[in-house]
Length: 441
Image 1: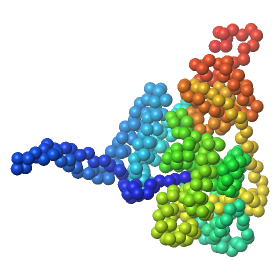
Image 2 (image 1 turned 45 degrees about the horizontal axis):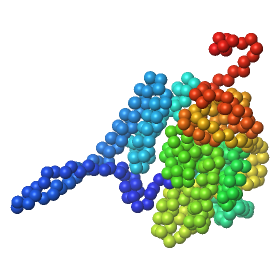
Image 3 (image 1 turned 90 degrees about the vertical axis):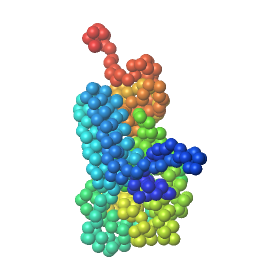
Image 4 (image 1 turned 135 degrees about the vertical axis):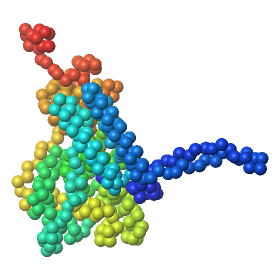
């Protein structure tokens, strides 16, 4: 979900950096015996190229500080510096992809940080939460083949969703893409399998929030149901919230926690945001368009055309290209997901639903301690708690973690026995008769 433009801020709309020019007060000037007050005069404004170079230099300086910390074995500080380097670029009020030099540097920065992440992982350390590309990045690049378009135009079968919508030729074209092209079909199969983990939870929450249940499949278009999906513009999680919108809907984002990557919290936030958008436009396709590009862009398109109709705005190219594809992609995914067998998906085995219970804990706590205590893999505990960036609750913090069903009492008893200062250790040993401390060590 990428809401990148804030209405009324011309600098942002033009993709220009927001530069504050310092004003240097000069001494007062005498005129006919009177001392005039100091006059603030602007220094010459730096060019956009100069501002971008300065931006890159600041980011690179932070990256190099992270490198130095990494070489000294201070992985926590390295992680912080690398994160700050990325934030300098993404928080600069610059449309990064529209500036070739900045975009090339940003991609290089991400690749270099990723190389350190891999190296750290091989050493048993983690520099940061692991991220995966957002599916929407791939879908935005789809170029429909001529045969897909012609085949879609010939299809007339009735398709009904659980909210009012027109199944247009554009929707049928994407149905054909997801069912007939090898890449599209593989993408659809992956999503149908992964949806099994989260579908029951998502449907329950959407029903509680009064949102059409079919819209849970928006998650497949956004992320293919991957909690660690992240776009270059920092949209994150199954529902791809950017930081600002996530915070607006109550998703906490701290140095150790990012609830945008969670399970129930961002799902409820997505349902509430969709409901807000529908109440704003009284039209689900427009609400979906705004979920993708933001209310400001949709509002301007409606104001420019005089039509609050997504398909009119689509035909007249009044919305961004990605958004024009986004809505028919979601409608196509919903149509297929409602009846997979109808489209030839007859051998898909959905992954088992994640089942868990909640246990309140106090930090410090390493999730690997819980995994070893209940006899499951650390990866399984991480899957239940994807919002914990490093699999860790720090000292002084409290959080409700998810543990496998039936193990909540066991985990609570364990944590009651382990002193807080030792909960960031993650080895548990059952002592057997005859063992000594020396042998255990």
